[in-house]
Amino acid sequence: MSSQSRHGTADRSGLQAVAQVPSWVYQRYSVVWQRASLSVGWALLYLLVDARIAAISSLKGSPLPVEWRIVLAALIFGVGLYKPALAYAGFVVALIYPLYLVSIYVMALALAVLVLSVPVVVRHLPLAMMVLYAPVLAPYHLTPVLPLLMGLWATEAPEGRWGRLGGGIAGALCALWLKIAAGMSDGLTDLWLINGWRMDLDMLYIQFHGANSLQTLLQIVEPLTASNGDVARIVLKHFLQVMAWFGAAYVVSVVRDLLLLRKQGRAGRGSAWTSVLSLVPGLVLIWAGYAAVSSWLQVEGPRWLDPLWLPAQVVLAGGFALGLDGLVRYLRQPILAHREQPVAVSVPRKERKKRGRLSRRARGQRPQPAIAETPPIVSRASERRDRPQPHIIGEEPTAVSAGGENSRRKQGQDIIMIELD
Image: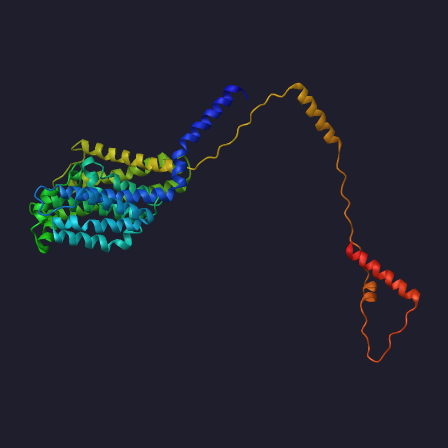
């Protein structure tokens, strides 16, 4: 092996080892990283909600000071490191006062939904977090990323598997939550309009702060049924758009599983091609929920390729989902052990001759085969002769001649020597 090839192999091994350091760190402390990511997610979501509510210009009441927000967020993060379900519980408790400042009935509805869903949420915390983060991603046009990731990670999620049906239901809930949140603040309910939308909490506060319980429910439902007279078509449009996101997450999961079952070609090895081919039907369904539904029902909304930026926006969301999936695959890649390469060592001529003589001398000394020792054989006659005889009461022991006594002693000594050997 030449010096250049040795140096090239060593450089490749060093670069490969450096590239695997993040994967090794993640896999070595995977439980800590997973708990920390969930805890950070719940703490950050609380900070965003509380800060936005405190920034309402017409807010009647005193919001919590910044120091209290920091302490509560730190507590959510700390208990989440111990047990992720406690981070969700801390998030729910911390939201009570900020939502109370908006409306006591909004607080009651939110707590009812968050508390009643605890048995499901604690088993699928990543899904619940992605659903609640949907309005946060809306200003960046990234809401379609959520159902795509729910489908990609349905059976291979780092933090737990939720299955195809679980991913589909979470995708539908994500679309429904977007419609409700946008309708409560700005009256928007069409998913393609919600992309780029930012929640206006000032308007939400004005609408719900003075409303009673019945008015609160009506104001939540009213944007979903608002139309020029054809309520049935509008409700059907909302239903089909929600089901489109359900189908997007479900189909992505099904296609991915089918490709992995084939185990042929690049698409069957769990590589980037697997994710690309899995995302294509999901992107088509999301785009169909935007354009095809409104075109078919002849209601207000986009038409196929009008506007042109809508398909580009969907493709952009698919690229972002592919990047996140690639990051997860990189962190979960198998760590290859470093293999030592053979290195040629130059030996002086005298040393080679000396080693050759020693090896020839060693080959000339052949070890003698070991002789197995055969165990001594004791006859049954000698065993019966040496066995103690029973003594009958009333009889005197017979005298034994000196010669017979000496021979018996000699046999006894022979037997003892055999046992020692």
